[in-house]
Amino acid sequence: MVKKVTPGKRRYLLFLLLPLLLLATGFWACGIRTSDDAPPASESTAKPPSQRAYEVFGRQYRPIDSADGFREQGVASWYGVPFHGRKASSGEVYNMHAKTAAHPSLPMGTFLLVRNLENNKKVIVRINDRGPFAKDRIIDLSYRSAQMIDMIQNGTAKVEITALDLDSPDVQERVKTAHPDYFTGDFTVQVGAFSDKNRAEALRDQLQASEPDVFITRSSVDGQTVYRVRVGRFTSLEDAQHAKRRLVKNGHENVFAVSMDQ
Image (tube, rainbow, N blue to C red; front, side, top):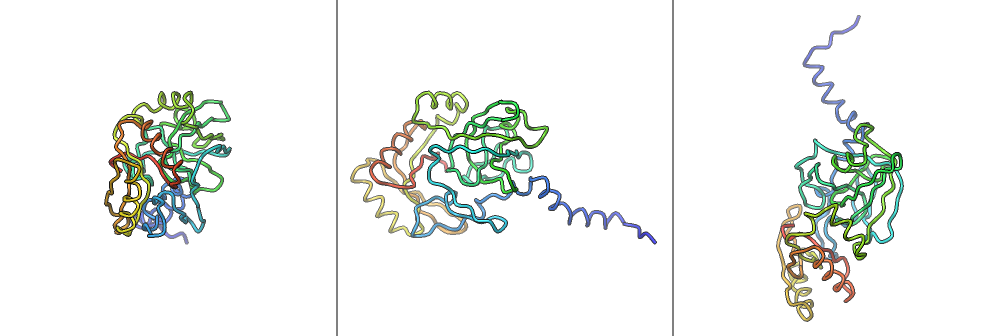
């Protein structure tokens, strides 16, 4: 005898099967964002949360400190409506209409040239999120980025991604043309992040010997207070990057330019 499935039972079965369907299509994997999973800042590290090691589905990921010379080939996917307006791993609000992307290990703010190997179409994207976590996928593009290389309908595409060197004037001009809004605004350079206020103040005092504008911002990460040591206030990303290179040359590590509102 075949049992009749009532509407209530259908809804219950759909609720149980939905995560499996999303995982099968890759969207569930792309939706896991490390901003919620990142461990709180410790006294022994100056790395921002998005640059710390993390675990998803039992697999360990370790973000790299530099994208210099990075090149990779593999399958790209894209994500859109379910995550539009939600917080990305970088702290930004995800905008599916911006030319951004998620990568499991590249530093936040890395600019990549993404080339669709199936049609040779290209787009320059900025990494501002973590993912994808589906097997055999190397990058998760925003809806707009995927649209520009004509992979919306198929959902995935074989691509090559290449990190762009902003120190090159020619490359910088190409990136500015692709992302004009990102290069103007209010920027600063972060040199350290600590849960211990005394350590933050010690770094600030050290920097003040050579930097005219050093300050500490206070914020909360996963319920823990974080003190971020920052240098300068700039109206262009180019000026902030120049200050970053100076600080790295002076021996500071894990230095990166950020928007003042992050």
